[in-house]
Image 1: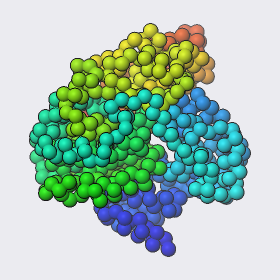
Image 2: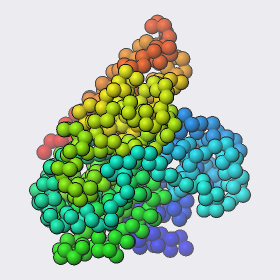
Image 3: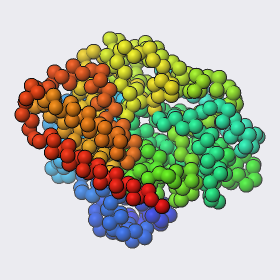
Image 4: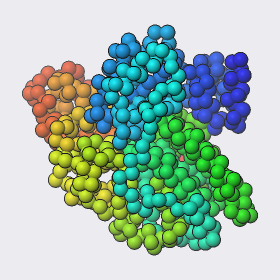
Length: 594
């Protein structure tokens, strides 16, 4: 029976190393966790070593090499969930179930813990159950009833259906969130133009990637077209793990055809035959609806062979589901994960457009970017470039959450002022806004006249609102713990530095800090920013830097006398961090040598 379970999972995928993560994810869905003997069998079937398989199983937080509860409850721990009372609700559930957080309860029935943002900030507090389903809008009554259902061992699908409702919450639509056009129109328009003319329209539009970095889309596609290699790949990055962001969730729910049209148009332009949509593990509940959309598109000749009757244009899309790793939002880490490996960012160059998925030239774009491509294909590049600003064309979708009356999605042309968004969402007495998530920028009330634009305030989409009853030190402390938890551990500056920052913030929060701690935090910021392997470490101290500069009294009120005796040797700790950073720099230099 055990071998039969494994064979059923393996038969769904090619028995090749790149299937590893999907095999482990589905095997755990059948077994509840991943016993070592099963990992050994998976290794043998996929031609891998046991160490390789165990390394992957230990990297992703949704994979478990030790038993977990039959009911695996993970509370979303984003700052907006905390603001809505998630910590007290989690404590209450643990009390009712007589289980300690992070521990397996009696009879292996339940385990309760926290996870990073689940992409449901507009309808929190929220939680994940068995990495499959979500419960939104938690309150004391739901928690009490949930405890009784778990004690009675009621299967999760039989729980009250309204608990699982995920609303789109589109509060303001413009181009991308408007009523979708008929399926396939954008793709037909691109095929009528041809690949070169379509690329010219994308170039004319001045479209830049919506994932945060803002790289010019047409240039990325052109680089991939020119790269050596007979096979090319299109990848959609739907791993929106940035806390406070949930726009891609809604686009995949309401505008999946536009996103898939955009991927198919990219394939037409660069000459790709295969596409991959990397769906974050927290959005596992979208897998079946998206799979149904793919089947429908194949029947309509929008995917598969000879798309829309164009002989030789063969392209199809597979969905890969992640297993909980924020770092996989970085495109090279995402490719590593697609290949069945740990999601460790690659050393670049080479870039994915030259050497990407399985070594093939690969275009990686975000969900919102592909959605924009479909609209540009319909209406032309000049139309798109006429929206927004000179350097930031088109519209941008914002995931608004926090202290406001109407959280949800708001789409505006680039160049919109911060205070316009605050007014529209019903924010009152606002102290600060975190734009772009923890890796973005924190704005104080004196900056609300600034513009959302690459040339002013760039953003990946998150827009978290904090009113004057909030403590911005605690906000920054929450983000510090997020980065420490999500560091992939590859490079020492990030692995050690993020932990040191979180510890220092805890020390201040406990009233044991001194004025020297602020200097230490500043130096750690410099070390992380200059020496980290990827953008996670480089941006990990952004909230710290902004809040110290703009809300310094929140830190100073926690600082003791300058002569306060610290709990441990600050100079020695920093010295260790510096030595580790120097070693990392030397190693990185050697790795980049030809």
